[in-house]
Length: 315
Length: 250
Ligand SMILES: [Fe+2]
Ligand SMILES: [Fe+2]
Image 1 (cartoon, rainbow over the protein chains, first blue to last red):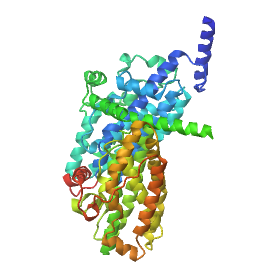
Image 2 (image 1 turned 90 degrees about the vertical axis):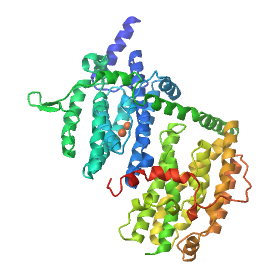
Image 3 (image 1 turned 45 degrees about the vertical axis):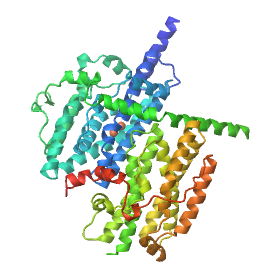
Image 4 (image 1 turned 135 degrees about the horizontal axis):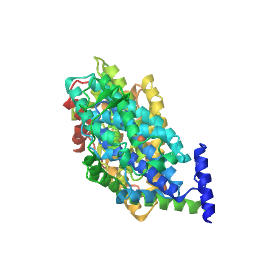
């Protein structure tokens, strides 16, 4: 029996190495299943918690065009949540259980959404930086080993890059606008910059899952590599906007061929991950409230569907 | 400018604007993801229609008026939405009842406007009717689901249907400009509107096992610019950026 499991394990890894995808019906190590439930659900939760900071600006958007694009964007994030929950369900866990894990605090979501969206410029900065950072992770995941996850990512990435462009375009309008608008853009960039860098997770030496994740193609690059790539991509965009760099330590390093940047406040990172960021409690309670208030609606829908089913059977 | 046509377009655009605003407040807070997405979809459709009406109104007005001036920079008494659309999202049954009455009326109105003598109006109506056909199906299916779901949902749905009945009369009160538009072949026949509305809503409520509210009075005022207390708060949100940062491009 021992030998059989080992053989299955080897075959499983060989399959991944050869570039084939793992499908829900295929045999998989228990750890692979668990890791994927954790990661995909965390990703799904991030999408729906991520609807909240931007959602709070839909009613206040400054023009009809911006209102419609923002609402469509936030709705897209809901759609991403839906694909991801569905992908996760193929691993043998229900959506209700996944929500239960989110609400109890057992499952995490991206910490970036625990920061407040306080000005209209934040709708620009979030799209540009936060969706921008998310894309870097997600483009990589289109080639991940678990088929349903990889396929969900292909759909999601297309929309995310649209969100990023839209966010940048909001920033550009502000930067081409009045002094007040440009100030709003600068202030927002300054606030979102560090949390965006934190989105890539802890430094490589502190990241516990990296090696296994690379083997299963959940990660093709390390946290620090992705973070550097993000900085390298974003600094020229900041310059294009004509904004000041949010970190005085940002400087091109000829030797490395990369931008150097300042030290991240990891205490803040761990504090927010641990539940003590500016909006952790608000975000979680908004999700819980929506779920609890919706309970009677979901029960009614279920009861109705059952009645309809038994009517059909009676015919 | 053609004042009557402008006023008429404002009447057509304001109700979907305010209802879309209410629906957009729910984005991210729905009872499940599918419903959340569907309600946002309806809000998006309504805002799309609003933009068509306002862009046309802006052209009719001339003098450089834009859709955003119309959407964001009027005083409260200049908004002409029916008071039904301002009512808050108290619970999901309220959201559905409000939507159900609105959709039944909106569908019938737009079907008539597809025959409008004004080509721009008939084109906008023809595009919108496809969306509103879906809205009406969505809200009436939910009326049935909640009406014939659990005991709790039945009570909640029945209460909401009864509550919102006092707002439906205004939908059929014809203003002077609506009379004028009907007479000239541009607008809708309100008698047909009422008949179609009653037969559709009665049928759905019957299917849902819900009592049809008997009511002989109505809340009114929105179409004359006299609103419920809710509109002021809606405009505080809606107009915030345009009022706080006047004259800027976004
Ligand atoms: Fe997303
Ligand atoms: Fe996004």
